[in-house]
Image (cartoon, rainbow, N blue to C red; front, side, top):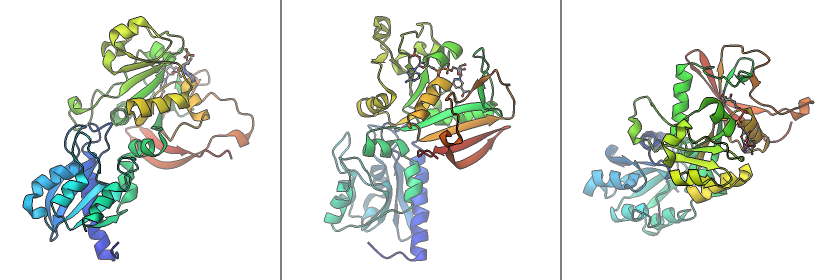
Length: 366
Ligand SMILES: NC(=O)c1ccc[n+]([C@@H]2O[C@H](COP(=O)([O-])OP(=O)(O)OC[C@H]3O[C@@H](n4cnc5c(N)ncnc54)[C@H](OP(=O)(O)O)[C@@H]3O)[C@@H](O)[C@H]2O)c1
């Protein structure tokens, strides 16, 4: 490890920030692979850059090395995630960096994938390349919450989205819910869907809204480049109507249901009814779904929260009152303050007339 001076640190941060920006260009298209960016710098000049655009396509380092060509010799490579050490659909990036004879590799975030974990760094160090890790690590982790969590725990990162009125209501008593929030907030939801491997909902939401839960419009991004999330309906009684709008694209629908031949005929993946924690494990381990967005009514949202399965709540609050007969966002019965569920507020953003709160559940009871 080399010693970090202030100037040295800021130069490293500058280039790593550029690599992080590049990584973000793949945020809607790389899943289930992680978002990774790479820049190659020599004598203070950028000589190559790249990001991983899509599973099956070259990794960030390969694009950056191609651009740098022979100039990569004795240069410094900045990579947001530890270079891979294994033969997947592409050869190991750590070996490509060795072959290009870079002098130094700066890594933001180690890769907990058991196929890589420390091995990428080892290959570089064995070849005499200086390696420094941990530069901008917190920001780099935000690129891949799901991938990092799944690789280290076997479970996906779960975001729970709720749109509510000022009085905490999410639908009228009749089930009518269009619309509580305005267009900017609803547009923002498209981003969270687009970075997710799956959107999970409950059967009652599908019956009430006939929702599609797909990605339709993204700001400044061509939607055809997005890897669409799977739409997963939890339907333990097998009530999903074959006329449901989401079944117009059955290849991206999964249903947790007692087996139904008519869904099989459509090519819909069926999951046997199982507890939520087991379902999340199945999604991560069998289907490489590492980021999950729950967009359900109070029944299923409460179940996820009460079982401690939510990593982050994304709460849109609209400046409107829906009254006491409208449905609450959370339907647990608490009688004592000690039972309350608290969150840590990590971000507040105004979207048109609404606000978006990003909240991390505090799991310990107060
Ligand atoms: N404002 C918002 O953000 C928002 C978002 C989505 C929906 N909504 C509104 O919410 C309303 C529907 O809410 P809802 O509470 O009736 O329905 P829901 O939460 O969408 O669906 C509930 C159903 O999910 C199924 N389920 C499967 N596994 C479950 C589990 N482990 N725990 C709990 N449920 C499980 C249950 O049906 P089975 O027992 O048959 O499996 C249950 O009845 C609609 O009016 C919709 O418009 C609002």
